[in-house]
Each structure stands twice: as C-alpha cells, then as structure tokens.
Length: 306
Image 1: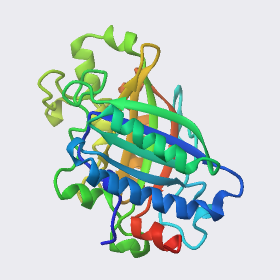
Image 2 (image 1 turned 90 degrees about the horizontal axis):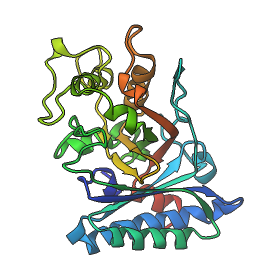
Image 3 (image 1 turned 120 degrees about the horizontal axis):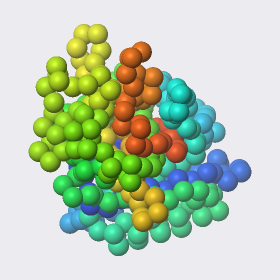
Image 4 (image 1 turned 180 degrees about the vertical axis):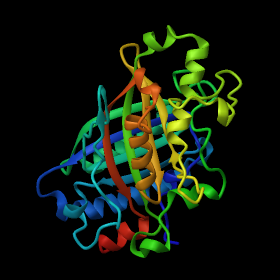
C-alpha cells in the first residue's frame, strides 16, 4: 500500500483548523511540487509533535483535479452531489484545495496553519477558515455523542482508503465536507423525548433505540444504510463542532474509499424513503459542501517528479 496521508485515519483530537483555498491562475505548473512538499511536511510534523497527536492531510477539489493532475483521475471522483426537497438542500461550494489540520494543542495547529499559508502564498487564496473543537466527551453541540458508528482500529483504513480496485490511487481517500449551522435556540426548546426521537438514541447514556422503536425520520435511521446483501455503507467521519457566540454548528468531514456511501446517505437525509426524511434537518442547515480526493503521498511526489 502506498503511503497514505496520516490525518485521514487519525483518531480524534481536541482542536482542528480547516483551510480552503482557490488556486491562482497559472499556478498549476508549480502547485504539484508545493502540495507534495506540504503533505510530506505535515507527515513529518506529526512525528515531531506526537505528544499532541498532530495530524493533517491535503485534498484536491473534484472540480480542480484535472487542472492539477491531467495525467489521471480517481475512478469515482465527481463534483459534490446536488439534492433538494422542499426546504431541505445540500448546497455546493467547490474549492480547489482543502487542508485539514488537527492536534490537541491550539498553538501547534496555529503554527502549522501559518506554515501552510506561507507555502501557498502567491499560488492559492485562502477563501475560508474554520476552527473546530472537541465538545465534552466527543459530542455534537446538540448534546449527542457524534460518530458512534465510526469504524475502529485497522478497520478505519479499510473503510477510508482506496485499495487495489484503483491501484494508481490506492492509499487515497474520497473526502466530502459540509459546514452545518445549527439552530440552537430552536433545538433547545424541544423536549428531551423529541430530541432523542430525532436522533434515534438516548442523549445522556448514548444508547441506540431498538430497531423496532426507531422512528423512520430518526437521523440514525436515515444514515445507517446497507447494501442489498446486508453490508453496511460505512464512512470514517472526522467531523468536529465549531462556532462562536454568533454562529455554531458542525464541520462534517467524511472519508471513504468510495463516494457512493456519502452520496447515498445524503440523499436519504434529504429525500428520505418516500415517507420520512431526516428530521435533524429541521434544526440544522448545510451552508457549504465540497468534494475532494486526498491522494497518497507517493502519488503526489511521483506526479510532481520528486
């Protein structure tokens, strides 16, 4: 297996910084070398800052991939999917580059983000920055534990990383991001029973409802999907809460060996099963969405002639 970027399958952290860039005109001739160096630097930084579990990765936007790497494209790489029903939508806001930085120290993240911006100066413009944090015992701001269905151990790599089915891009991962803004005042006015029914598990104890008791509109019901043979459509979620006193929500990040799982889950949330859609969308709204591919370090170095 080629060397994957360590941040894709990393365990959770206390703090994150997400940087989104659009490439400058004519930067395609220089960016492959800079990006390869940046990914290698993030990996070296992870070793140097192991005490705070530093990790990171670089991903290239689906709409920009061909400009940067015209020699080949991941087999399933596609623009962010478009779904809309009634007042529910998943807006797309494509950008060219996504840099994911996380650790257990705010200052280390800040230093790394500063270095990323320095290396990309003149080549790409920073168009959005989101700083995230762990909330309590890895809960969303709604108060519910987030990512309970995440794969663990070695299975994280099996879910998140492309394998031999697309050998040139093995060790890479399809990345989807969405920034959700929560309507916290509305959510907090709901009864505990309404909140728990909306999610599909208990709030404090984090116990999932029995299958027969789970409402069709429950978030868990809408996203825990399976193939016809019973195999789960798993994602490795690297999401974290973000916000200030003016706006709060979740920066959702999905890493997977195929974009099909994310696309199917998002469609199920918005369109539902013909009768029920995801009622969590009554209390939160996606305001951005982007699709990327995070290639292996080996691919980036080879593409840059290093």
